[in-house]
Amino acid sequence: MGWLWAIIVGFVLGLIAKAVIPGKQHIPLWLATICGMIGAIVGNAMARGFGIEETRGIDWGRHIFQLGAAIVVVLLAEMVYTAMQRRKHERQRV
Image (tube, rainbow, N blue to C red):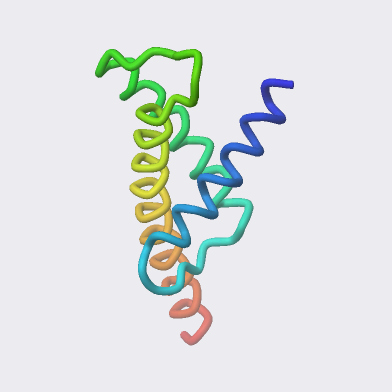
């Protein structure tokens, strides 16, 4: 069940990150999901580092760290993915 939640949270975080970032992102949905999963892991580690542990209610602080990390990871993935696609198209022209 843990992997299913990781995929669901990664999917949601990836979609929110793509929606928050201005402009059109060209990364596919599966890559946005993986970026969201990585962002959730990094955000949890950051929250733990800042002393935000699990609470009885909604962990808003932890979720903000997760979303922030997911946005950064999606931005980085977008840059790498776009550069790789550009190189691929340049090689096909030659």
